[in-house]
Image 1: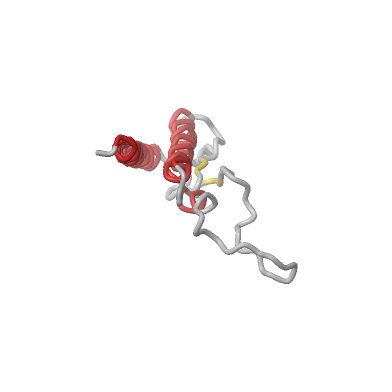
Image 2 (image 1 turned 90 degrees about the horizontal axis):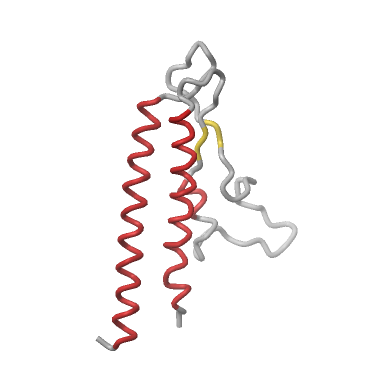
Amino acid sequence: MDTIKDQISFYSSALQLRGKRNNILASNIANAATPNYKARDISFEDEIKKFDKNGPILTTHSNHIVQNSGKSIHETSYREPLIPSLDGNTVELAVEQMQFAENSMRYTTTVNFLNGKINKIISAIRGE
């Protein structure tokens, strides 16, 4: 039987990742005019797999091949620009703003799912 913590831990992890990604994207937007600034990002899909119980296969023997990318949790990577700028800045404002808006919308959606899950748990506890 799942505990209450198990029921909401996935959403909690997703919110932490979405918040971290929003901070990174906001930093990119803020540094759009900074020479030689390199736009960073994290892959939400790759990072959330690290929290999923049904995620990558665990290795139990030294001869098993490790499937992870070798990156630590929340490790950022640099984004390749579509059109390189002359000052070395890789931030493309339109791309960053679109990514920020999409990530913010997904953050809000995750909050709504979490609220629904909590309401169902409360309803079950009350016997409704």
